[in-house]
Length: 201
Image: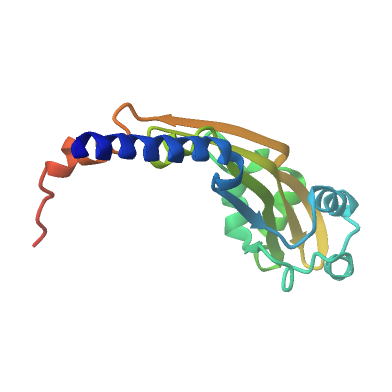
């Protein structure tokens, strides 16, 4: 009798945990935020890019606009070889096919630089579905929303001579679902774990 009572009590406890987990899914589900800032929200970054006028905007103007490459977060500086390789992405493209501004920039070598801004992003990932199934590694559902944007500016000397939009996604929405028939037991029964790794000498 005692054995039956213990089993019944255990089943009742599992049922309570399952019901509590289901009722609190939204509160207990894990969430994460991926933020790469420096220039404000999506609209702010877009407006800054639109306000840069090739052939007119100077490096000093960039500083006034809040785009100073020395103080702005997440800005990469490219030399003339990086700039050339950025446009010559494969063997079918020739130097003569590049925009005239970029050709002239690369020919001036020491005066030619590229500025890669971002990508700036604000991505929020939230877990969905059943909490118990997630922790048991049976089923995992994640939804990611937010925005992402970046751009490139190219300068010869003190003048911005060319600009190029980078990754631009004003409305990010991704849905990811992972199912595992054996739940957490799949980790234990994974045959790969029982294959000895090669020994290095």
